[in-house]
Image 1 (spheres, rainbow, N blue to C red):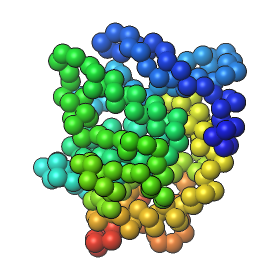
Image 2 (tube, rainbow, N blue to C red; image 1 turned 60 degrees about the vertical axis):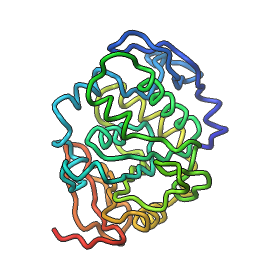
Image 3 (cartoon, one colour; image 1 turned 90 degrees about the vertical axis):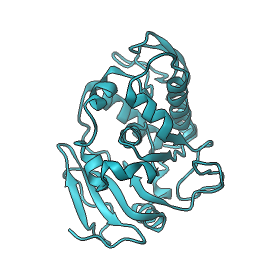
Image 4 (cartoon, rainbow, N blue to C red; image 1 turned 60 degrees about the horizontal axis):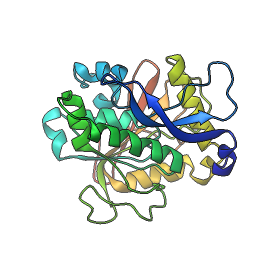
Length: 261
């Protein structure tokens, strides 16, 4: 589905969104033709009770964080590129874990949702959970919608120019209509995300994404896959993987790394 086609099915508009600090104005993605149970918007929310509860006891046990292979004491000096940010939840986990994370998102509507979520975190006044302080400090979105494969206006964390490399590059391509897991609202949001992105995936194959990621990653590339899904590409094979309940993370070496498992 092209971006133009997506406009006939969805619209972006402001809405009031509940948070632990009361209702806040947020940007939401709404289906134009609302069916029963479809009136709820998709909002990127890093301030939700669900996210804060998830990270309150630490994120070291999260499958994604374990897949990085990086000790907590080393993370503050390491950069991660999330090349396919989507709704930003995995990037947020990496940021709360202590990595400096730069998000690429090429779709202008998803980019707008991410930018709005980061603004709401910055605008929050008073005492904030440690997780939100880490998120604000460590998570950055490239200013303009940008394709990781064809960056034209990307900037580094210090605005010093195009980002040439990172210690880790993270990919969640979401090519297939694999079975959706989790709560109903998660299924709804992921389904809408796929609708927005479908139709452009043929322009950025798995092989292209992986090659670009390995060229930029100095340590390793992490690729998120459903537990029973095939690898992103037939060759090269991943050097290792970390299994979760519904997803796994395939590990590929970066350009300056030789992994041993």
